[in-house]
Amino acid sequence: MGFQKKFEQIKEWKILILPDICWITGKSVHYQRVERIRRDVYEGVLSYFHDLFFYMEEESILDPLDERHIYALHFVFLSNISHKLDTWNEAWANHRLRTVRSTPKRLFLAGAINVNTDRPSQTADQADTVNANQLLNESRPIFQQSTYIVSQQCQQELEHLDTDFEISRAGVQIFIQAVHIILRHDSFPN
Image 1: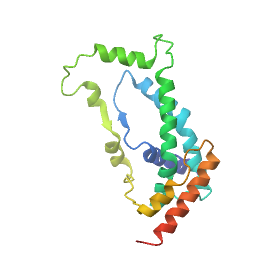
Image 2: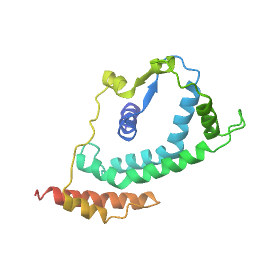
Image 3: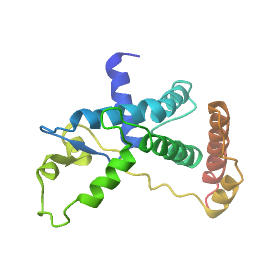
């Protein structure tokens, strides 16, 4: 697979996984910090799932254009991703920053206590912030949020799957089971 195609797929997965991110444009004194935290989140949590989902796609286990597969992917992996992000967030918020000899959580609380609440309607930082959807509309197609709905009977059967797993191989097997359940119920409309 060519580099350009792989790069495009990476951008598509970032849209599917993190659709509501705001991007900072223009000059910002905090740009390096923003990029650093984005890199840390990706390396600490998201790269694992990114690699797993690409593996599933390359092995023809996952079809990212099939709404049923996306539904199963969300059903199986979303709570696991959320849990890992929460764990990472807690660790990051409490790690010591060498330059200020404090933690991000303490810095935030200190800033929240000292912030003047009488703010103008739009600050310079807000003017530099552009919604990711606006940027993406200009350069590439947007994947709409899935509106796929499963039947109540299908949902009850999916609920019997154990989505609390630690290893990727188990997650892939559960995903395959979820897809089979959805396909079985999808072929018999109510």
